[in-house]
Length: 634
Image (tube, rainbow, N blue to C red; front, side):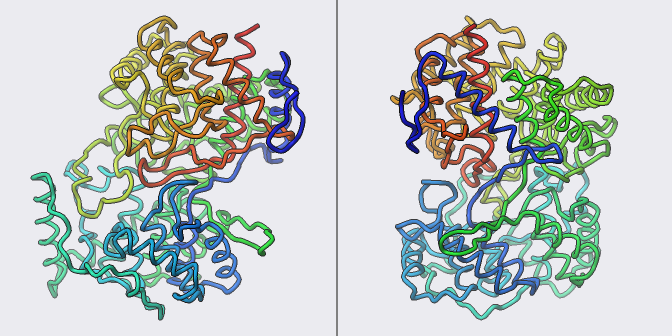
């Protein structure tokens, strides 16, 4: 017997993995919503909470109660050094700290309060307001704390660029284009709502200093273009401006979802509301009213010893969570006719998207069929979710409805394959890196190229559908082989990081017919074995996206340990020392209620910039890993 970290005795004998699996399955089943879906919190960082307060201030809908509760949450997330970070135990982040500071000043905290003095020292040490990202300085400009003329130009006239032209809105990723379009309106109108707060104390004294010279010839060209656009902004008459702003507004309104949001994610949602309001749309206008009402669903309130805290989800992941839960329960042997699985299957079928979205710009003749990540996001179904749902539906009762939906999804996914053989998350061949040369694009991924994790999930799905020998699947396999890292791992675009990519790709390749003794598989196994922690688990710090020395290195976590085990089991190494130690780690660290703790973030929004803690990852992936390992050992 051993004791968990909470002090509860759990058996670690020969039957311990089975007991751990049974407890986890019971726990996961208990978390299902009565409507049939699973949905756990998607945690990010306090910029969501700061920007929520700032948006409400801009719209003049901020209440004292909201302000107090959000400020309490933001303060609770400040670290001992005075900073805020973008992920648990991450380094201080300048822009996150500045936005948190501004929100607390808005909430009434004094600049000389100890916690803000500590934050100010961090900001100045990191270069002051002048070194913040463009998005943060846009927020400052919206409240008169930065000059719009000192920001990169964002002309709304880009909405008129034809789809074949470089830098048209469809050359940006779906999340970026939805953000850029409303920002062009705010920039064109020079939106400004003074709030009676100054941030002079955060300036390092380098305002007006020319940024570092661009390193590439293309970047120098864009710097020159930006200067020209700023001259254009100063012209007294701009013939296309009025019609461009109107077209942007039409584009935004056409993409409002049923829940009132845009893309199911925070940035385009808040910027669209502010842009339309600045254009004169009143708070009671149906578009604005629906947007504000829907935004409330992204609010989490929690009672703490300090009082009620209020925090904002950047996005919600019920469709993704439900698919992963079904796969996990199916792996664990839960009968497909179980009422919980039947309800989930019906709910997923209800969520199928049968309308065209922005993806049809590149695939106009492709028949719709797929799923989004969120409750409502019909404009942007994503390939990763759709592949996972096809596999999940096989864990539910076999019905004509689910079979037809799966067939449409497979056809749609095959039609969304990129020209190089890989699959991206939302679009086809959205790979023009010219976008990164624009001075505005200093934060987050702004294109959507194919990735190993998405391609791996698609290849796995196609193989399970009996389509391993189709041209689409074979091209996907070749793409994965061509993109294996020199050390044997695979890059993880949407999860942290090389452990996630490797955990997604190895099972896919084996199912698609690559032998477990093949060189790519053995190299991946060797990499995982070399990066197993001394305690038997696996973990990878998010800093691996910027510093390769962190690849495969970090505190052991349930989801990351499970990803490694999924790869080892698929590779036929379930009885090896590494796999047995990994299973033992999961057993030892399970809580008495069947769950696991996972404070570290293991999900990725934008590599290097924005990260996610999916609260259900700590359940679903360990269940799948334990179940598959136990099944392979019998």
